[in-house]
Image (cartoon, rainbow, N blue to C red):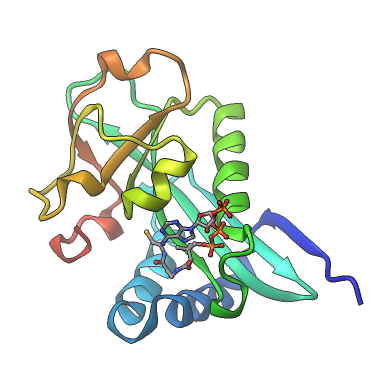
Length: 178
Ligand SMILES: CC(C)(COP(=O)(O)OP(=O)(O)OC[C@H]1O[C@@H](n2cnc3c(N)ncnc32)[C@H](O)[C@@H]1OP(=O)(O)O)[C@@H](O)C(=O)NCCC(=O)NCCS
């Protein structure tokens, strides 16, 4: 039987499925914290506007990505986002779902006027999608792996004028997530 994969915005009623997807995908060590974080972000007014996309196959939720709003202190350009978190169900990994969620999310952000997107993640993975470390946007805390703090601009040249420390959603602000 041909399996059909759909990418779409998540629904209000899907938080529990999204939570358990992140719990499974991130495994024992990180799963508890990330699954709690993702639900808190979906309910956090300071994370708005946000884009929450799911990948669904045969009525099963197999992937999710969330982009939430960030501001940069002292910068005129305020239309920024951070990608966090991203998860693909273990049995479905390495089949392009993560890639599709990221690229579709970036396209949607661009359409609605977003100017840059940050991510704290594996450089080997995110550099494939245009994220890089050549920028002057500071995370809220000093990071143990600064090379994991990456950005990509969605409006050409915007990074020249964005310098400063970010303010992210309240739910993403605790030190433990950085
Ligand atoms: C990381 C994760 C989201 C990747 O999703 P995925 O659907 O398995 O990845 P994709 O199939 O879209 O991979 C796209 C490309 O990146 C490569 N890739 C996948 N995982 C990679 C990794 N960890 N490092 C480097 N490259 C990777 C793939 O081989 C693929 O390459 P190709 O286009 O040349 O074939 C997924 O493995 C996952 O959920 N892991 C657990 C949770 C997690 O770590 N999330 C990331 C938080 S920052």
